[in-house]
Length: 175
Length: 294
Image (cartoon, rainbow over all chains, first blue to last red; front, side, top):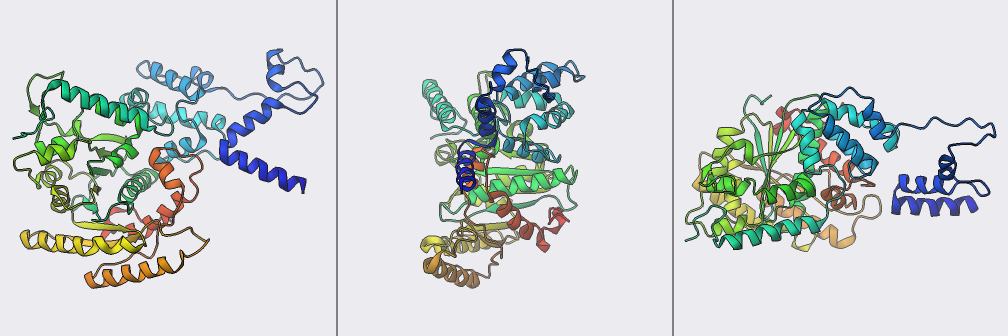
């Protein structure tokens, strides 16, 4: 009964916030009566109770730092790795799946962004440098679109046309 | 790698609005591109946005790219119709329109010719907009594409004529509701009129896809939907139009996918794949090599 109720609550939270967010929050809280993992990490991991500490997976910037990158793509890929880490590039696992599918590679088996890092960044370095640059410049694959910036760009374009003082500034004879 | 007979061009049209034309056009483009990608094929899909609301462009390009495209005043389908690139901050005179500047890559196998919100104003104010310019552009510069999908505006206009001139087939999305079939006689009349004026042009309705049908598994939509489906079948039969067996059920994932939100998209992907299997397995489209995965 308690298990069902807990499952329902967790399911609702996962639906609302996504698995990764819920998982991260649970890890942050940690079991009661025990310092949380963040605190442990900030103590330099001085837990001496004999438990085997799992080796943490490299972050995207750490992974990219170990890759052999061509000089023409290195700054772009490094910046994308930073954005991946801050979740402003491929912010959810769903985005990673879409990115992989669009580029014809198998999606990661494990539903974790951290596990998908090698696949994503190997794919990026296999792309044409200008393609990777465009992903960075145009903020592609950065999650859901928002109306605001598009609306602002439309307004900005509209104002620019009005300032130009011409209804045919986009190239048509308006007679 | 182009197909032997050039690209197959399909327009997604219904004279009724809100039936899911953009969702179907954008999703089919993505499915086709993903299938080519999955099969390691170099064949490509071109999506053309002929709707001044530019929703397909926004869906395929995403916020960042579409915003960049607007701000940089890059060429769009507007310039395809006008035929030149107007002076910009980087050029002080009108210049020839370069094809590479008018297409925007979405992925390795998918490109889009985007639309812009001023598309309609531009053409309405033109002296004699040429409805054949899109067909000419495709004939001259896009023969290496495998599939071209055109998303159309829901009204009879020069955009519709341009789509007809460019297309071999018409795909008609429809929702099973009272107003659903109102677009059918309009579309049929419009197509017949086009055929009369363009006797050398073979253009056919490849089929009707029932979109946003109902929740899969929950209910059948009740008597209203059943009545609407009877009307759709009757009207389709009058015009000799095929109805696809696989209906696209409602999914909250579709609007999320249009926004570029791929987390928890529910059954949207599988719904579209199911329809795409039937669609691309059709004999008329078998040359595309996009049929059901083994």
